[in-house]
Length: 82
Image 1: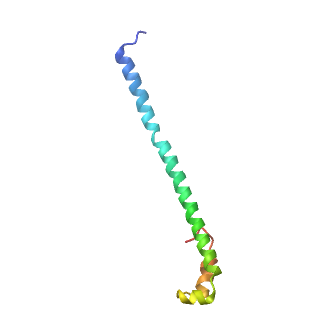
Image 2 (image 1 turned 45 degrees about the vertical axis):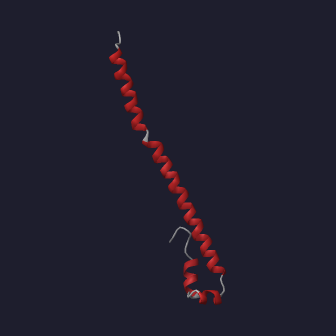
Image 3 (image 1 turned 90 degrees about the vertical axis):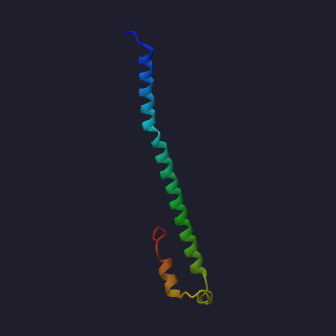
């Protein structure tokens, strides 16, 4: 079978179309990885904030207008729960 220049162009166009369909996958993976990192960062920030609240004295909590019972409720939550 003899290929013409037109056949080669059509063949490369098919390859390009195939590659175009694959392009979103790296973006999807990158987006998922970024989302996972942001989630872990949020969890770490919550855990740090709750540790800091737990370490406050009753006088400091009174100054910011929060009672110990509210802090105990907040500190008892797992890090993934807002």
